[in-house]
Image (cartoon, rainbow over all chains, first blue to last red; front, side):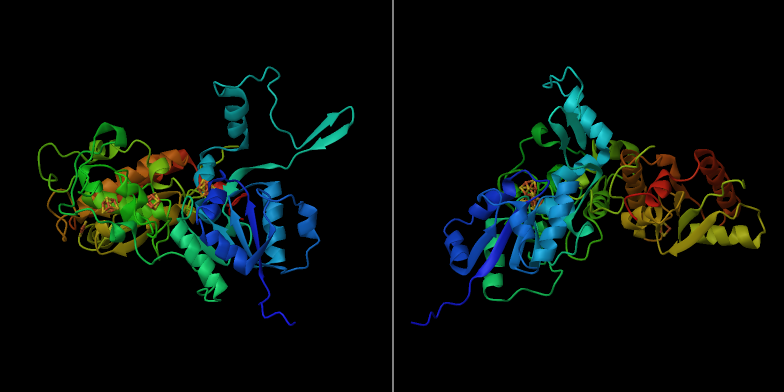
Length: 328
Length: 145
Ligand code: SF4
Ligand code: SF4
Ligand code: SF4
Ligand code: FES
């Protein structure tokens, strides 16, 4: 009997500098995972399958139809795998904020390798490291030489490393968007190369909260007040990244009475997320009181404790300046 | 070696600061040639992207100049917005390892040609003391290459 079944697609999943959350996000699509298995064979997935890098090396070029790559690039090994998977895949998809923008691991770009090692291996209060050892790329032991991949000074995004076809934003990407992307792949209906697979609107556009009075004078950190549940958080003085963040998450955080921290990445056509948020915030901060005797721009701005960490929480490596200056 | 000549990008609003710079010119007031002027309609039009991009492209300093606070802005409150934006960016630059003094906001009216010249002299001096932008050194190095 001739099989009528269409040849199955081949999917790969890989994690680089990531937290593992993106792997969970794949499973979070629940019963839709069966649709994935119905249309595709998973040929590489280190978190779930026993398969070695050499098995990938042995694959013909473009053997994999779609590679879902999560995590940023911070070591030599991750860079190698990004290049290898690029070669072996027809479509390479940056999955999640770490791959798309550098993500939370990208915040390490406020430091360099030396500082990261000192903090992680020497200074952190939970560390007991009597010989003050830090990772080396090679180390001699009686049995021979041990090698570790190099740890870079700077975290990079996936597309600063290799050519990327699609981006699925979010930390991790919301399951509805993952399911949509899989559907588009199955139906061969992917948008033009380079597209971000998320709606063309901001988190604010999707947000049901009431926006009335676009001005604030006092900024609160989340633990300092209990916000009203129906009014815009930004108007209540909590820095909410909604205006500078691409939607698609159904305002998950805002619905839980927490501000958007920006994991959806920049809005369509924005050069970078941090600049867009600074622009938005400076347009409402202090408005109304400007001609009053108490007005003090510096004091207003001083309320923002950590502009870099707030405005670039997920996108520092993808920002215009990319990292803190490295002092020689 | 020749003395370090800073490159300063100046965003000047059409209605006050640019007119002030123009007056400095027609009055033949001497000031250092280190500034490259970009005319914008209002200081409030200066997007943070412009400033970050200027630094990324190798500027040693960036000046934003507009109409005097509180009431001179042609668009009522663009100067206030610009002021807050620059204050925010100064805090941000510090976190990026760039001296906040490299970014300045000044108020110059159309009749203040002499003030414009003083601002440029002063800023050029200050940046000469700071030396080349540390970012420029980095840009030429590993990560943007
Ligand atoms: S995008 Fe978020 S969930 Fe995914 S790996 Fe990065 S930190 Fe984890
Ligand atoms: S700023 Fe935040 S709370 Fe306000 S409308 Fe936008 S997403 Fe909603
Ligand atoms: S509300 Fe913001 S931080 Fe939360 S999931 Fe959506 S985009 Fe991400
Ligand atoms: S028009 Fe000069 S600052 Fe607005």
